Image (cartoon, rainbow, N blue to C red; front, top):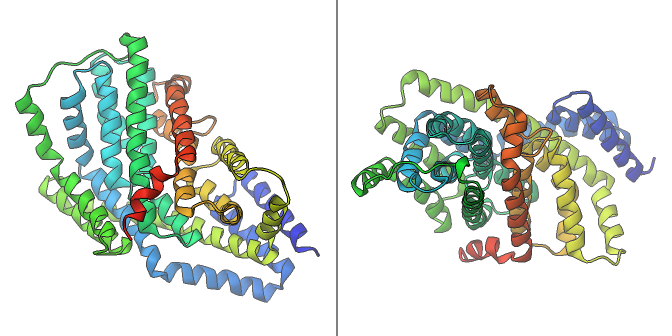
Length: 433
């Protein structure tokens, strides 16, 4: 049987399994194993499945995943987000739409020690939404700012999505982390500008809060020094080559635990809860990752990426036109799949094409994460939207989706800027050398 036809049939089989409700990791693993079975034989297919699962589980570089997840769990449960929000509130709350600006700023700062969009959105819903309601903010603006701000969690390092992208594509995780810093800061500023424009046009959506004295502003900074120091330690150590990303993850997890203890928030019960949450999240990620690697190995056997790459090379189309098509496909998939599934499902197919076209893999990784961010706030799935809805059931989904529309537009413009100016993502990693 023609290998390309087998690959197409396996892709169709995988999407059929997904439509039937099978988890993405199991669907990818089953489709990849079935395709390998057709191309080789049952013994080889099962041996490849077992070897992939074993080698993935014992790979040292993958220990960065549970360590960064643990770091985010400690940071979330230690109440660091509240200190960050109080500081942003004190410095920005007196402006028009100031609490929404503070929410975006706190999301960006919390992302630097969390690495999860869903955790960032859930935490800020509990911290910021009651405060914005107290000052009579529009539910639309309040929930939209939280949903959009939460997406920054997977762009500003440490980011689990960037880690998995680096492992799948054999791209330096340290360079990916550094590449995410400038686009992450631009995203924070872009979302803040969006809030400013929206409230300039309709001031009633975000009334001004009380002016805070300089002394109070300075006192709030005492609660954020630890977060800033931890981020500088982790990223500075990677940048200077003092330690690897895996070592940085261990230092970050220990630092987040220490900050929780110093803040008198980390109890023995909470410590055990963080460990359990980390085990559950890591098991989910590794299940999806093993399925993705099994499917990736099958695609290599079938030579489907090579066939697609050779076909594209015969087309008289500009490389950026092909890139735009890929980004549109990501946007459409974001309406139905979660961010992790999108990346692990598409990278085995798209990355060989990107490499063939000569695009920088570090830059493309950041672009992928920014497009995936869109999927977190676009209907009908929009995982960040559903997280907010779950924590604030009285708010309608239509209200939240209307609130995120300006931020979706801003994100599209930011992606276009990064496509036009790749150096925004690549200049900082290049200074490592």
